[in-house]
Length: 486
Image 1: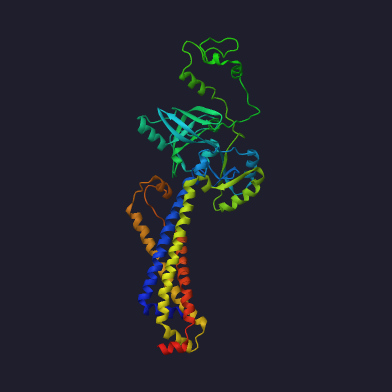
Image 2 (image 1 turned 180 degrees about the horizontal axis):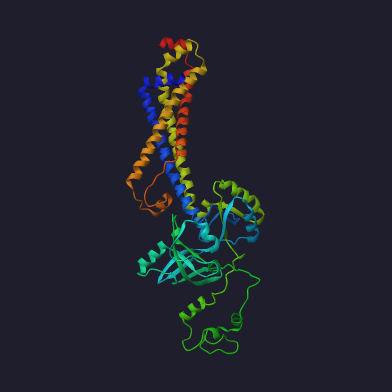
C-alpha cells in the first residue's frame, strides 16, 4: 500500500522526480562503469600474472619492504636493492608441502643482467627456474620455437617479443642453439655467463614487463647474482686446483706452461690471450650436473587448489612460516607496481565518487525538501486524521527509496548498453601500460553482475541518505498550520 501511494506521488511530482532520478542515475552510471573497468583490469592482471609468472602466492624472506619477483616494490629503493636468499629453504618446503590447500610448488632465483646478442645489448630480468616443476605449473607459457629448458642443463629461453625486436634491429632472428652472453655487476665485481638459447616462448596474456623476462637455469642466475652455493658433495677437478698455483704472468703472458703455471694451451701459445679464448673458457666445464635439490633460492611460488580463498591459505601459511623468517604474499605483491597500481586507481576513483555522491546528496536533499514543502497540506491532513510519525516516515522514505531504485536501475541498464556499444567499436589502445592493465590491445569491457548489484545498492543508499532530513521535516509539520496554509 505504501509503495502504491509512493508511486502515485512520483507521478504527480514528475518534474522533481525526474531531476532526482536523473541525478542519481548519472552517479550510478559513473560508479558502475568505473568499477567495471577496474574489475576488468583486476581480472586481466590476475590471469596474466597468476597463470604465467607469480602463481597465487609467493614465499619470500621477511623484509621491511615487500618484494616482487625481480626487486623491491618501492621504485627508488629498487635501484639499490639486492634480493635476499631465502633462509631455511628445506624446512620451509616441508611446511609448504604439508599445507592442504597447495596444488603446485616451484622455486625461482632472480636477478637483473644485460643480454648481449648479435651486437644488441639489452637489459633483462632473469628467472632461474626449476624446469621440472616450473613449466607444468604455468599454463600461460606456450612454446613458439625450439624446446623448453630441461632439468639439469644450462640454457635460456627468450620471449617471442624479444626475438622479434632483435630480428628487427639486426636482421637476424635468434634460433635455438645461438649463444647468449649475460653480464651483471655488483659488490663482488662483474659476472659473465654464456649459455645457449634453447627455445622461444610466449606468454598467453603478457602483463607489463613480462616480455622482458628470460628463463634460465638456476645456476646461471645464481652466478650472475653472486649467490654462493655450498655443497658437501661438490668435487673439484685437478685442472681447477692447478689454478691456485698459477701466477698472473703465467695466465696472461705468452710463456709456455711450466712449473707453477697453468697447463699448456689454455691461455698461452703463439696467439696469446684473445676474446675467443675467454669466451671458450666461460663456456667450458658446463657439462657438470646442476644440483636439483636444495641450493639457494629467492622465492617459492605456489598455486592453490581451485575454489579456496587465497587470503585464508596465505594467512594459514604465514602462521606456520613465521619462525623461519619468511612470509607468503599474494600475487599482486609478487607482480609489482603494475598490479598494485590498480588498487591505487580503484581507491582514488571511489574517493572521487564519494565526493560526487556527497554533492549529489546535497542536491537531492534540496529537491526533496521542495517536494515536501509542496505537499505540506497533504501531510498535515494525514497527521490531522491520525497518521503517526512512523507512517509519515515510511511514506516519504518509500517514495524516495523507489525513486532511488528506479534511478539505480536506469544507471545500471545505461552502463550495460554503454559496455555493449564500446565493445562493438573495437577501439585500439596505443599505450602499452594501459593495454597491459586492460589485458589486451583493444578496449574490452565486461558486465559484472556483482558490480551491478553493488551499484544498485549504492543508488538506493544514496537516495535514502538524501531522504533523512526531508523525512524529519515532514514529521515536524503541524497539522493546524498546514490546514491554514492550504
